[in-house]
Amino acid sequence: MMGENGRVSIPSGKVQPTNSNALKAMAETELDPAIAARLKRNDAGLVPAIAQDAANGRVLMMAWMNDRALALTLATGRATYWSRSRQELWVKGETSGHTQNVRELWLDCDGDTILLSVDQLGPACHTGAQTCFDAGGRLPLAAQQPLDGASDNAAPVVGRQQ
View 1 (tube, rainbow, N blue to C red):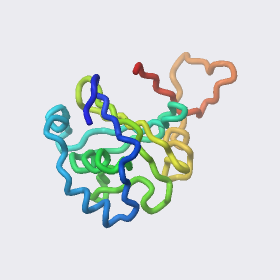
View 2: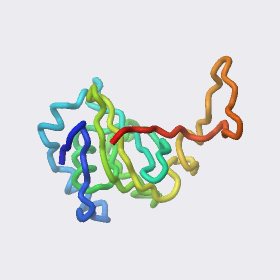
View 3: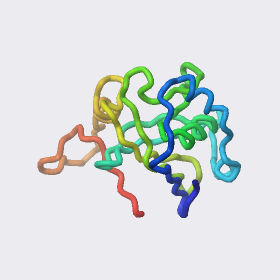
View 4: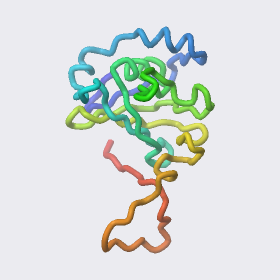
């Protein structure tokens, strides 16, 4: 359901199938044409999707979505992405149990990035780190000194107005 400022809300009472067969059947769901028209995809038909922890604002990971992945995410409330290496849809946590239950989705002003606000169960990164940015770590920026008490490896927090 599209709201103002690109916000898409997931009703809290939405039924969320738990087995992969039910989820794959729902993948046949078409993306709302009004949402599809707002997306700017790359040459492969993909849009970057940033998952953010709804509880604390930490950036958890970046993945890719095609229209079917976005439609499935909207239909089920479970984060579903497109695997470029396997060329298939994947539901976050389907094999690991480290699921992302989606609270909200946002589309940026250009329509070329999706932000998912999620409840993350377990680590977000396939390495076992809490976030993919914890696993990758901070890169050095010339002439920048760490803030007192700030961890060099803390994942960024993204703020937004509601």
